[in-house]
Image (cartoon, rainbow, N blue to C red; front, side, top):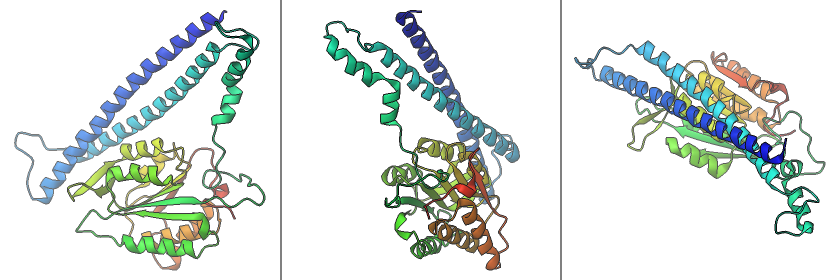
Length: 354
């Protein structure tokens, strides 16, 4: 088969890839639109119930459980489609690289209008192995790295923990300040305090999440605030009112920043579904399978970061945090759940190195 035929096949595959990507992106947009429509209907029903109103006479009563089920299914569909799209985009990048490589003159060949001496450097630059070595990021230590070696005598890597807080429900205010203060104190008292940069953002709006991630490039993202039984984070709206953020939106954010984020800590009520979903894109996540009390959230988080700051593994840090709840007589040690990406071992994962 000639080089021309090879290029034709590659172009055909790339065109097919882009058509399939466009189709899946449209399906994903439809799924997210379904989530938005049912979330809006649920929000309207909640508001009417709070105000003591009934459904509009012209509208049939909303089946709340059916609506929640539809939201979960549509959100999962969007998540699955996002994963398929990401794979197609990787395949497209590979095909484009192969096309680029094939378009370059081979070593010893003379390109049209160019001397033979110029052909060799061009071919070397297009070599896939050379390109991979120049663009592939080095394996990171910390959460996501399983016993990765460090260079003797090198300074420990400094990692950022991004603490995103939202106290949006005025009638259910949380003591988030105390949680952040306890975490900071325990990090300061740990052996590797200089390796952890604890950054806080307050009254978080939805778009603040992306801004903060881009500014700080965090290894770990920590959410503190309210969650709902509908798999939502409750953040601050531009109008000062609570803003509910769907599971699919949270997962999309984590997928878009999976090159830097290795772990997500959902220290909010009813967040186990969020934690389970995001480990398709990050190495580990912690979520709460039901409501969690203010004191329990503070004690659990503070001890988790204390253990992590001493270089303990993710598994040990999680277990010590649960033990801290028991030592304080807080019967909520079974509320936090730890999830890890398939193939990862939490006993070999750390936030910082000992």
